[in-house]
Amino acid sequence: MNLPQPIPFTPQAGASPLSYDFQAWQEIDPAQIPRLRFVYGDTFAAGYLSVTFAAPKTGKSLLALSEAIDAATGRGFLTGKPTAPIKVLYYNAEDELAVIQGRVAAVLQAWQIPQAEITGRLFAVSGVSAESPVVLIRGEKGDIAETAFQALSHLIKREGIALAIFDPLQDLSHSPETNEVFRALGGRIRALASDTGAAIGLVHHTRKPSPGIAPI
Image (cartoon, rainbow, N blue to C red; front, side, top):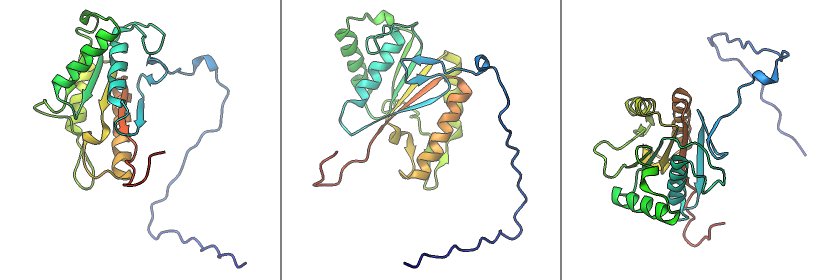
């Protein structure tokens, strides 16, 4: 069998010289290595981004909202581990506020939780009802909406929000659903988490199956 011959590499003419200053491992004290601090369960870590993936119509939104309520109350009814209550932002970009409020009331009733336990701690917001819905990336080329990110950063810091969940990811974008767009958006959201110190969660659906093909 004739194998293809490697193509000789020719450096690009006029390319600026580049140097990497990578450092070899030096002895350190393991106790000084910063540890992850989880604000809720073992999924949402302060300063980091987490993503919940599932097929459409499988209950992602109800799960995300239940997690938000559980974190805000500190009860641990989903994790089995009660913790200190925290402030949580749950932003739903596709459901009306009345729908979200109805779900909150249903979760509270199911777990016999008084509204007082989420008062002042849970921000349950509808992007459908908002005058200025959150859009984080726009246009065919995927231009990051820095004003939106700056507004979110200010809100999170001002209100002391420890966990922010955005549901669903595709409705935060006015750009094509391409790998490049989601890569750029994911990187900027990670930077938002790092800047604010909040844990950020995204809800996203897996690709819808083609007609006639059953989902796996």
